[in-house]
Structure formats: structure tokens, C-alpha cells
Image (cartoon, rainbow, N blue to C red):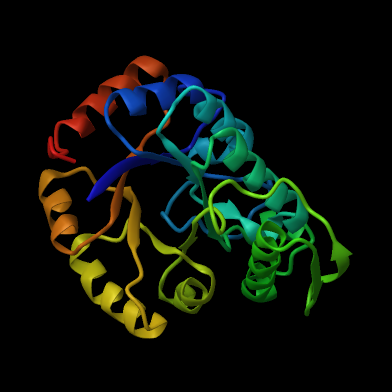
Amino acid sequence: MKYGISTFITDQGIGPVALGRALEERGFGMLLVAEHSHIPVERRSPWPGGGELPGKYYRTLDPFVALTAAAVATEHLLVGTGVALVGQRDPIHTAKEVASLDLVSCGRAVFGVGVGWNREEMEDHGTDPATRGRLVNERLALIRSLWTEETTEFHGEFIDLDPVYSWPKPVHRPHPPIFVGGGERAFPRVARYGDAWLANGVPPEELGPQIDRLREAAGRDVPVTVFDASHDEADVAAYAELGVERLLFALETQPEAETLRALDAMTSVVPAEH
């Protein structure tokens, strides 16, 4: 099993350069960062975590700016979104941003995607929450085409695009891996568009049966990455027993000194041979 970190990078916590270097120094192989463009003041959508929305949600840096900073400060660290809110993003710009990150990182970009939970946030982007799943599917199909085809033409339910050129193409072939987030309702999206399932903090006792259902739905052995995961030693061992490919520990957003201490504590439960 491989190990990494998932976190929110904000203007109040450790910066992406210092964080990227700290992760690589400690042997972590992947950094995934969260995205929220903004948080509406009047919000009806409940936070899935329950209770008040944590302050870090209000202050996230643009993920591709932050990830580029982390990428140029490191040599081996995989850098990606966990998750990019594709339903709120222009897909042509997004395809270019991911491909550009992949180019400047020499093929180390990962595209973690999701549909999102904050209905008011997506409505501000002109997205209808009732159709966001279909919209995300269509945008993912377009993005993959922009990455892999010389020219792209697309005519769907939401997108009507006459033939276009789009460069740069990603360094990673055929394209940066797409990690699809979400629960079991996202399994058809994982099967169709995903290179891996990005399971959000699912405890190991629940994850095993879900992996079985995922692979039955997909008809193939889909790799699984758990992000926002516990670094409890027993949980780490249980995830390894389930055959999880990557475990990304949840790193709270804190200033640099506190972050480095937290990373050292997480490193202590990672097997030396990883």
C-alpha cells in the first residue's frame, strides 16, 4: 500500500511549497487538495460532516495554483485534486489546467473529481443540482477527448462544441489518472470514466463490501484510494488487508510548525518498507 496526504490548503495554513517538500522528505507519495470556489453566505445545504462548516472550507486556494507550487518544489510527489468540482468548472479551461499541471510536473498530475454537496455554491456557477451528475459525466467525457484527440467535437445534453484544437496535451499517457470520488451512487461513473475510486474516509469495516460491489458493477479490478483517512495504526493495517492501493491521511489545516509535527506522527504508523 502506498501513502499520501489529503488536505485543504488555505491562506491560514502551511503553504504548498513547504508542504510539498515536507511530504517528499517523509516519503509520502501523493498530495490531494480540496476545492471550493466560494461559500455562499445563505446556505441551505447541510455539510455532510454534520454541524457547522469548518473555516477551512471558506479559504481554499485555487487548487491548480497551489498544486503547481508544490510540484515545482518536489521531484517525485504526485499532485492532484481531491476533489475538483467538475460541475462548477468550465471543462475546456479545466482540461487545459490539468494538462498544464501535468506538463510542468513532468507527468505527476492526478485528476480527482466529484459532483459536490453544496447546492448553493453550484447554483452560483449556473449548475442545476438536479442534473449535476449527468453534467459531470458529460464534462469528463469532453475533458478526456480534449486530452487525447487531435481535434475534439462534442454534442451532448449540456455541451454543444464544434471541432476545436486544445493544447497542451498531458505528458502522462493516455491522460492523467482520473480518480472518481463519491459513494456507491458514483460507481457507474467510476466504471465509465475512472482509473480509480476515491473513497472519502470510508472506515475499513464498511469498505470491504463496497469494494466488492464496485468491482461487480465495473466488471474489472478497480484500484481504490481512500482519502481523508484515519492514521490509526489498526485502521492502517485493516486498509492494507483490504488491498487498498493508496491511503491518504487527513491532514488538518494548520500553520507550518504544527503541520510538520502532525506529519511526523503520521509517518510513525507507516511501514518502513513502503
